Length: 423
Image (cartoon, rainbow, N blue to C red; front, side, top):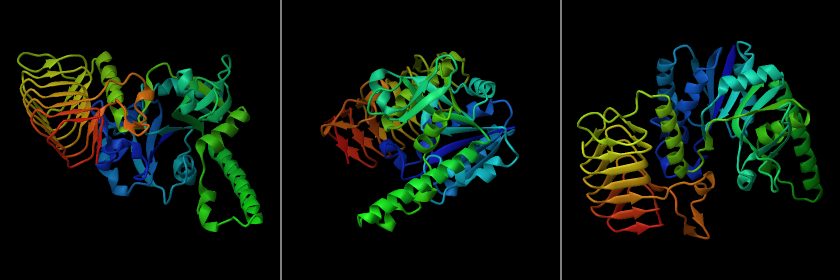
């Protein structure tokens, strides 16, 4: 029997995902027609022998309840549970804190996934390598450009044995082009290893306190609950690699982070393209009198799209949206209850819930060429060219052009805006 844990964070995280995370938690934001976390759950549901998926975070309990109830209907063979951390315990602290519940039923293997990623999730292949190599844990890695390797946790991998020889979190100098994907599988003995890591961390904290006290600088309030925090990357993975207890599995499919709000658009495209390659039945098709569809397009059944509209590629139209005559939409996400009036254009953009775009209006961002293009909103105090994002309830008047801007919720825009952050 196998289990999985997904780390969902909490409301104080995902600040780079604003203004979209001001409406709902980042894990529940829709990409590819489904919440970010749904794609992970779908992939986990296909893992042989997996019986339970546990979400760990510090959101209120009610936040994920409707979503998990729906998951229980969609995946009845799997049980779902949400466990709330009483405080921020670090990337591995919550996992370790709830070890008794995770170990209930004596699972042989335990998956751990971060929620802010999109991927093809080759989890059965990952599990097969983990069981074949017999290490305490296996980390899924992906190959990244040398110029951007410093943005990730880097793993030095033995090409023949697939053993992770060294792990460094966001190194200042080049270490490896193999980056952690935030997907792991562990043997149940991982908790004994983590207990030792907790002891080592406690010893380090005690030494630091003694040093600070000697100089009269120690403040007990500075490290409240610090002894209960455990960092997966620095405290666990680095030690596992140094003790030859970590193997590495190379993901040959797609993968990218979903850190900033802008990164939702390329993630949306990746999932839609995957569905198109797999002949996904939920994608829109060119049939009779209807909108012109190019590439992968998702249209919610409750959305209304005029037959003369042109959609695609890589477009998601969500519930109760209304798309008028002559509208052009490409590489964009249109959220619930949006009304796009006649002859408007939405290109490389996200249009937030309950927003309106007037006739001949234009909301346009810049195409994302690489993952590095979407993490920073500004450079030297100037808004960079990226995805254009409208928050909830933004009203764009007729013939107004909003380009490469981020607009916070509840704004009325009656004049053109270019490369601005509109508060």
